Length: 362
Ligand code: SF4
Ligand code: SF4
Image (cartoon, rainbow, N blue to C red; front, side, top):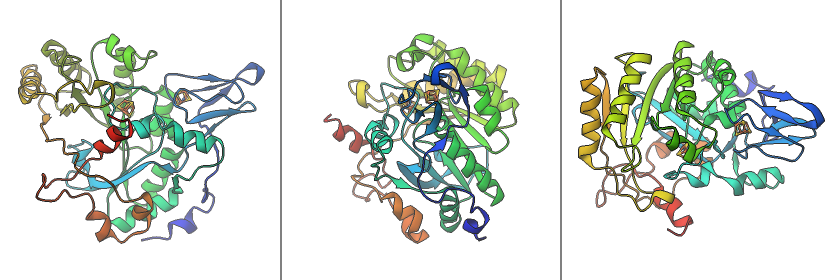
């Protein structure tokens, strides 16, 4: 392993505000952020919809640079990505803030993350920080082959995503960007030279579905971003989480498959995942197995060749996770051993869903 820290002494080793990459000064101290399609216009003291960018005296800063809300090691197939470096492992990281407010979000503490971001804005944060070089050093020590930016929309901390991705490339690691694709062309063009894989949600074909979770979003914007990413040379795979009564109409699922066929290609992988109740959609049932397979068959009937169904059990038996610092400092064997459910439970890797539900008193 090379001495990553020595190679990158110019990169921040301690937490500090980092200037937002894509910003445009306007009149009267207002500044516009061009990272995602909200394109927030902010005055001094204001924060963007995602809460992760703040205007200080006419300059935008990213509050969450290097702040790690969640971290894990696992197979690339779990992202889900199946047609890129199959059988390899990734170190997944996320920060706080998101540009959507999905009713069924399982990552509320992360995506809304206001407590953590408020503390950062006040300069009182206790959240874990990893400089890009530190993250790369950890990934190499843990023996993974890639780094995934996930858990909430990576566009809202693109500054960190870019610095890590550039360093990852220098050290032979690939990068995966798990996204809702409500991102600008400028952000895509910025990341395209360094990000290897985009795994994007296609949540619905219905604008009303998108308006409900992000009033500024439309289906066409999402489609345009996904298509553009592929044209820029990023390996693209897509995913639809099928929610009973919300986006499970067969015609619509067939329509999504047809769009993928026509715009990404017949071989483009589509991942159909099962919904598990959470947050504002806690009253719904998990997606029935038949619905998932009907979507699969509909996609096959329109000619899509690589369609994957995830009819998992949605285990949420884990009660706590290793602290972030453990991934950055502990021996590889200990990190790879975490989060296994006991065989008396499901025997699979747990997902910390319960924790979020409990935090909300649900
Ligand atoms: S990333 Fe998106 S939501 Fe956040 S400040 Fe920029 S434009 Fe607004
Ligand atoms: S895009 Fe993902 S992280 Fe963001 S609110 Fe929706 S489900 Fe949660």
